[in-house]
Amino acid sequence: FNAALAKMLNGDNDGALKALDGVEPTAEVYYLKGIIGARSENPELMKSNLQSAFDKDGTLKDKAKGDAEFMKVWDSPIFQ
Image (spheres, helix red, strand yellow):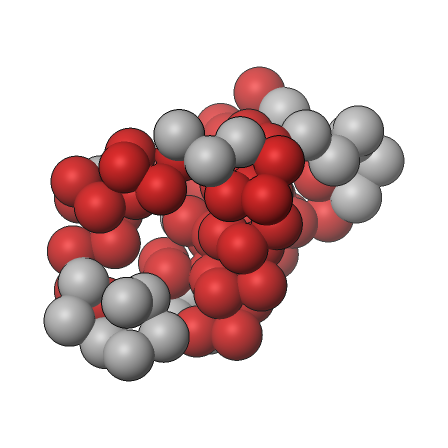
């Protein structure tokens, strides 16, 4: 997870996704994949992973509403 986070923060979104392939799919992993989707301008990647994160941990919905990572998509129907 930390390696994937570091890759994402360094602009390597594809590398971050690959690093997460072998990680247990927790709510936090799905949430990070959702962020990667938003950063990659891939709304389907963002939506499917955020939904999985919310299914595992409903409190992440409130976190996402105020997370600056999703600022560009706050008003989009997919994010709503």
